[in-house]
Length: 134
Image (cartoon, rainbow, N blue to C red; front, top):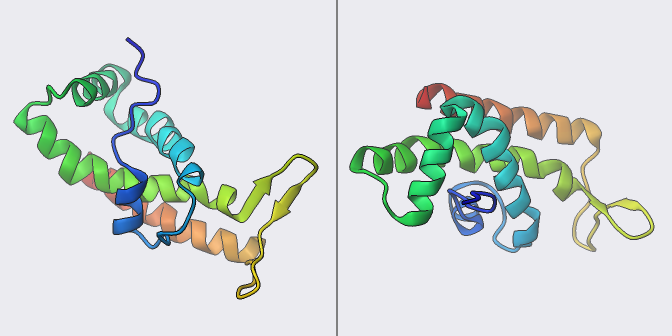
């Protein structure tokens, strides 16, 4: 059974517990949740336990201890790690003819320096939660 596409946090939870605005398109977050799980969480948990957690979460067979781990340690880590991974995609969009930086009538996009600053803040948060999980 493939665990690809089994997400341990939802885009709704990310929007509720981080500074991501509720109007952000869910498609900007979903692939980055998967990246945060595959790159960060799998490294922290080890592949065998990571696969077990995904399978148990998908099948609804998490033990009490695993549920506690998921809700109190994995989920907070994934919230901030997913936002960290999403920031470049939110900043720049790959379109048919180019890569563009978004703008709206009521706002101005940040520059690369501002994006780096914001990513540093989110990296510090995800690192805090990864240390806490370990």
